Image 1 (cartoon, rainbow, N blue to C red):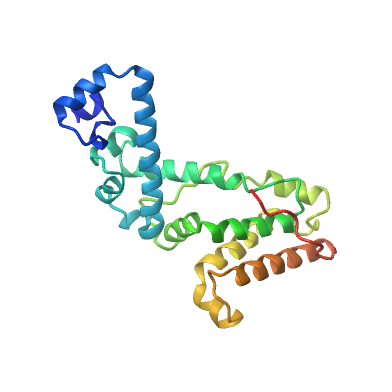
Image 2 (cartoon, helix red, strand yellow):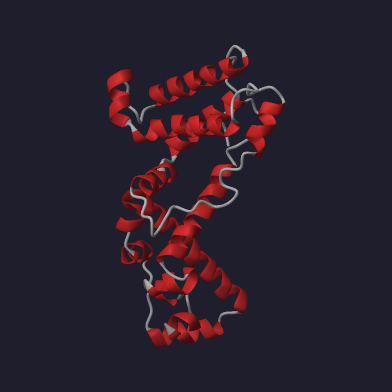
Length: 230
């Protein structure tokens, strides 16, 4: 542990301990910070893969460390252990996910964007499914405070996009469920759509149908798709 604190990025370098420590002494502080930042980022991405594939309980710190070629003790050094790493994954990925939301787009266009985003990278959806299905009272899935902010949904109701008799929280939960289903239920998708759940035909059809469904909430006809880039 002492060696890791002296040169936290050293386990990723294929050199002897003596050479690594000497190189670390010669590097300027900003170079060491860049190495540390790179190692932290690689650990977060490796953990994202592991937590999405196996859930919190099934993911092992040694497997996460092995993905990046570093000593597993660096997880304790940088994140104070597995739980801290898990919370950092959630924080990082919800921040990335929030960039998909555009409060200036119609609700139905936003929903279609989220469908395409989730199908392009289903890892966050899978991670949250693991968290919900295997929730442990001793380790509840704690989401970042701003991850499910209702402010934009409330604003949509105030400007008439959501009818006054609907709770914005319920509308948001229904949208999350609709997006999650596109990732979580491939066997159902095959049965009722007769389409490949990972193929572009399903993605396009489902995104457009969800747009049309939500457009009916405020009595609009679903028009041409808005740009889906994010």
